[in-house]
Length: 223
Figure (cartoon, rainbow, N blue to C red):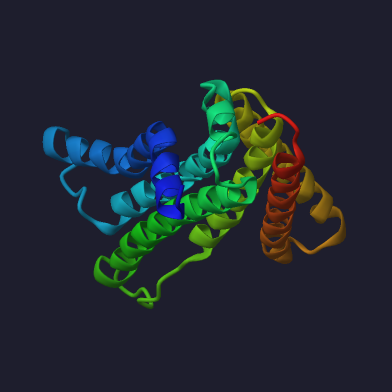
């Protein structure tokens, strides 16, 4: 089985995740559109309502990363296809690579879409007197949180029996980790530098969980 076939297989296994990704990406804008067309919000195509909608969409997209990590191995284990795939030629390392490439591809597409929307808002619908600079702070924070959620859910998926359990535990543990790191950093760092260190810690913990989850999956005796 080639890498292309593995990627197509991962796309089929994660079809519900892709639907969720599309929903979290577009639903806030659809709600804004409906409110603008059929409600009393006549100035919906302006900077403020669109920027609020973009923030909501970016934050909701972090859920997709947890679902991608949670579905990585546990989805195939839940529908028994993991046992069938274990008898096929691709190694577990090749399986890990295909799942990583698929998840990274979805993440890059989402980031590019959000980046395009934010750039349009900042450069085309900017408020009077604004500097016309694209502000990516929120997007970078959400990327760091997404890496943390993906890594923790990936680790859970490597040992869990169901994707919902892995994704849910990944999200809850990520929220707990963020809260713990934030309150811990408050004790030792100035308030203005906490966000910077929090982003670094989120990425570091997420990558560590990804590596540990990968080792657990490769060394696991049963599929």
